[in-house]
Amino acid sequence: MPRQRQLTEHGQRAENLPASPDTGRKRRRLQLYLILFAGLLYTSAPSAVALLLHGRSESIEGSTGSVQVVGFAESIVTPLRYLFIFACAVVIIWNAGGIFKKDARPLLPVAAGLLIFFALRYFQAGQVLASLLILAAFAAAIWSIGLYLEDLSVLGVIGVLIAALSLAMAIFTPLAWQENVEKSLIDTNAVLAGPFPQMNVLGMTLVVLFPFTGLFRRRSMTILGGLLMLVCVILSSSRSSVIAFLFGLICAVLTLVFKAKSVRAAMFTTMSVLTLMVTIWLPFATTDPKIFTNRGAIWMGAVRYFEDSWLLGRYDVFGFRGRLVNEIGSLVSHGHNLAIHYLAMSGIVGFFAILIIIAPAIASAGKSLSLSAVPVIAVITLLSLGVSELPLRTDSFDGPAWATWGTLLCLAFIVPKFEPPSPTIEPRVAVLDQKREAKFAA
Image (tube, rainbow, N blue to C red):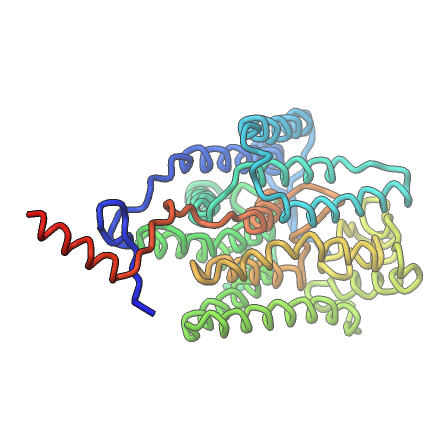
């Protein structure tokens, strides 16, 4: 067969031509900034206002300290919730013209998983959780944007801004620090929480956004922004976040060592499966109630409730009036582990539902390996955070939820990169014939 080459109408090689302009780039990024900042305001502005007005509570046994959202700070929670939902609605309406042209397949598993949680909670307690409605609006808004991989640099930019603000606060005001903490990684009695109520919120937020600094166009900005975020994570002394960072770092090193796409894909699959297996195994293997800052007691209690109701779980295991509060003697807001939280609260059915929601992000990251290793690193970081924390929570939308769920949904809904129209492909013999005809005509 004759060799072939790609030619445009004017006989130029297609690979030497500039790519077609991406006219929707500014729109997509503006919309993503809009809903992410609205989510950040909803989850963090009330506690930030309370921090400025009332200060920060000291750490006590069984707690890492917090900020009491009362008075004026409490009064703005509901308006900010509606503002967040309104921002999501604005983005969906903004993109309504092309919404039926978008690929809905990645959205279907997320919608199915959320629907299972809707049905479970209604069956268990006759309740419709506001957090599930918020997640549905958040997912629909991000999907409607039609994000490309490079648009996810927005997540990195927001992470750098949060790190810069936290470090500035650390220098100029003591409000950025939690005092009398015994778990500091740098042997001090204070840890950095920045504008957030707890150091874990700062650490979790930054560690899930950290991989997206790899999408910055300038390497110098990637290095500088990454260092700022890493310093904040270390100063926060959030062990869960540091462990997640190390998992992500291992993944990054492996993607640098192994260049073949098939090897990278096998590595990513293996790390994902192993991380989920460790997440499931750890609570069931725990016998020391004081391990991981008293997380052992939470896991051991949650395992008992799961064994008592393994199919559908018990919705009231955690929370202010949860069953574990009386057993442990302190507030247990969630399971501090992705697997046991859902197994205890919603049984095998709920755990299956959260896996369905996570699956599109894992699949999308695997497909993006030929373009960038960033999605793979982000997924591994997010999954490993679930070993001793709860980054993806459906029964509440607070703390770092805008960042953790935002990361998962952005990764799940990445669309294939825009390509210029396919050029014509002509046999080399035909090209030579055209050249001869042109020469004789001259």
